[in-house]
Length: 406
Ligand SMILES: Cc1cc2nc3c(=O)[nH]c(=O)nc-3n(C[C@H](O)[C@H](O)[C@H](O)COP(=O)(O)OP(=O)(O)OC[C@H]3O[C@@H](n4cnc5c(N)ncnc54)[C@H](O)[C@@H]3O)c2cc1C
Image (cartoon, rainbow, N blue to C red; front, side):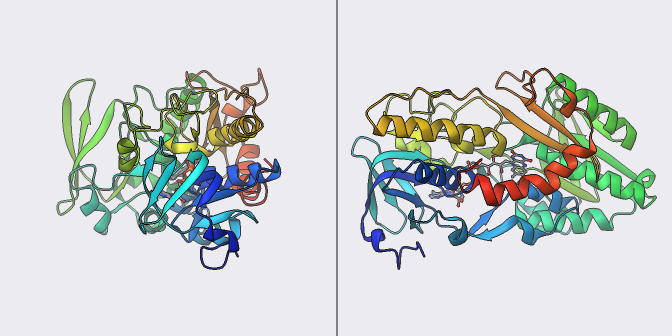
């Protein structure tokens, strides 16, 4: 429908708004701009599939099937938006051009850079070997999430290690979610007491938001999980099924044999962004954290996981960013200024059992920011938030967020 082969406007390599990345951010933004009657929008993305990544945790924890998290990219591309099925490889912000892997070059009036975060599968010595072995998995890719549930559901005794890497990460709490789902499952099967469960996080507390930490610590005690804070996975010996965990606070290391290793991979800004001249010190797109406009190039914008903003990277954060950015671009196209401001909101729903969720909501200083102001109730374990997170959000995603309506 809107592919490079049969879209009549595909011939045009010029866009009023060119969006790099057709993930959660790119499609939501394109749809919202369309609703605001902005014309000449194009999305660059090589992927034929669109994935709802928050469901990867449910898939790894056995509370959802893989099919539910995937749709054809073509089916979510907003009508009238040109889709370049290609990868961006370089940006020249002075010339206002984007180079593509195919060798083509595109020009734009405004550019939105949102290609997500890069997962560094071999970012820890031995990690890729662990994923390739029969004992390693993660919810950070669809295939490995499917494998994770196979491994976790078959475990009857032994050691399961769950790790979160240091550094930037998308939805950091996701590293823990399949663990709680698995513990609840093991408990229902009467085998939880036979399984040693270890959680290693690089942060000083289990998550970093007080009210949420209290709830998570309660669940950790309930399931008998061994929590290692200030700790990260530094090496894996996949042949001997041994993980090295380093405690950064004490400078100590321990080597643990595992039966299942569920390790979130280290993540970083996409490598190619650093060569564009648009990156901050960490390689992410250097935008103003409120207006989401590039700090020096007025026609460049960013949102989502690739944006160099201090909020916790999540779909919940970029949902707010999308509204701000769409309004700001629209205002600038009309000759005004970017007056809308993102408030740093982010959220992470912790699936602490197979029927309850603790919803962490906070801003970019980790101060709680409940959606019902003044009420911290959603940060407590609740059945209601499970129903909303497991059944409501995914519908909201496919039918409203990606349509620019929520
Ligand atoms: C396991 C897991 C659980 C999560 N759970 C939650 C949750 O419960 N709640 C929540 O709010 N958030 C959650 N998130 C985070 C949320 O999914 C991300 O924040 C969100 O998807 C980021 O959107 P994005 O558009 O920036 O990146 P993505 O959605 O990752 O999209 C990036 C797009 O860019 C494309 N692309 C990449 N490179 C290029 C290139 N060079 N040229 C063109 N296109 C390119 C890709 O093909 C992709 O389509 C979770 C993430 C994971 C991995």
